[in-house]
Image 1 (cartoon, rainbow, N blue to C red):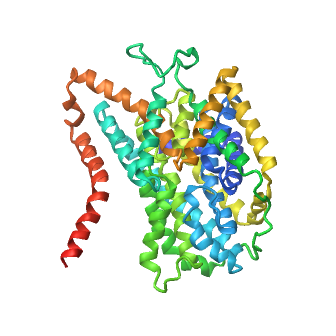
Image 2 (image 1 turned 90 degrees about the vertical axis):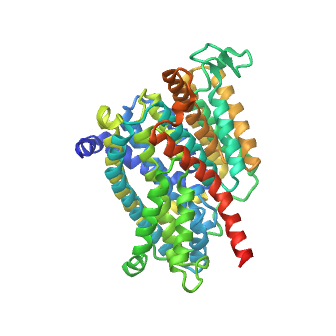
Length: 500
């Protein structure tokens, strides 16, 4: 059963892949520490470079996955030291992390968050090792109708769980689906949303899309805030960085519970680390906050979201590897990276491409140990990243973005399209839209359309095939429950309390 993992360690322990895991962990921590950059931007910037350098698929995926998990570690730094989340997954870390820093406990807070991240990620990696192959065996039973129902479920869970505004999340996903339909319809030859431009006949390339949407829009936001004061004059002193064993043991059950919660939430398509961190924090508050100290600098309040957001990040690999459905916006980008290599993730990946699936999982074990080893003694060094001024960051990111796209396409049309998408992404962010649903809609929309066509082709146009099997019917019911229950339950509770 675990042959793929043994083979994976052979792949991951090769000098090249070991070096890439270390490099990815280092870069990911730096990307995560810088507010606004985060894992998606980091991967979006480096993915075309990894491809054009000619790295094998498994090596590129190991590098990008290490950036992802490293960014989840790094996101805590600005949350604790500046009260500014490094990415969405670190939002809940600010609630108790920054108050701890203001109490003069910045060093222990960084140390405990690193240990919590390690524990949460370890729980999730073990879960990924155990459950991903089993889920892949179940997924073999999925046909086009079941995959279509699964994607409906993914969109439903995304609209409910991702972001503060479900309506904006749904609109973002629809925009992503519409962008994904641009180009010539492969079945009918009909031109869709091309506006007569031949450059759009092949659709919008994934790399152009993600670099424009994330990297260029981030550059525009940085330019907008160019006059904002840089530097870290307000950084609190770190003090001792190593957390004591007593402090760790006091949070052991918090880390265990939150790691499990994060992993389970990470498996759900379309959720991500931000949801995992929020659910784990509120759960821990109900269980442990006997003295109402959560939000004022409670170590458990820091450990819970840190364990959960790392576990969610790893958990989101489960649907990506087994079903080909990204569990988060970042895994949607990783899915695109696999497609660049003509690899389609899904139930057959563990048997057909064990070096990719096994190498990735084995590298997560290695990367997690590397990240703990880096983040405990070097927390002070990574914290200095927060002093990098924007006039250094903006040109650096811009050069990487332009070089990456031009290396892949070698034409100016791709550059212009990237800039247009970047302005579009910037406007969405200014209007309060999250970009993760857009990229998930872009990726899932195409797969959804393909599976719908296949299912209808099999049935001769009979829509009943979409809910004939037990699996697809269960997924339709789960999707409806996700959409209806959050609206219905508060009304029922209100009616019950008003009667009482």
